[in-house]
Image (cartoon, rainbow, N blue to C red; front, side, top):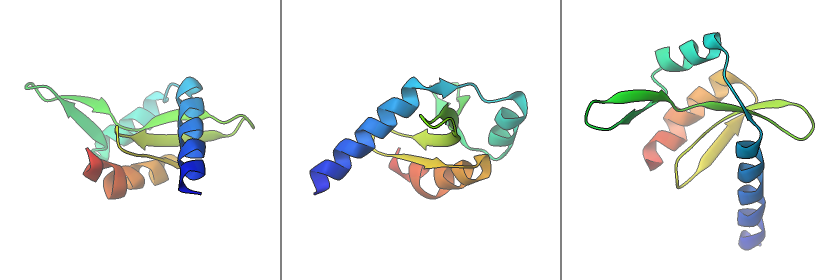
Length: 91
């Protein structure tokens, strides 16, 4: 049963990554101001930790991930919350 759940999660993640669409300027600004960012390299360059994708049914979903987990939410605020509550701690 766990293997089936893992397979379904992997398939969903791959599909969402394939169907990514860019955040609007407003969405990106909201994510950055909420400090939902990844800090890269010694210079501390910041990049947006939340992304947007379209499901097969046409609905937009927001997500965030590390190499260990991914989370999705139907709203931008929900994805920001999941970044802070779950994903950030797995980095």
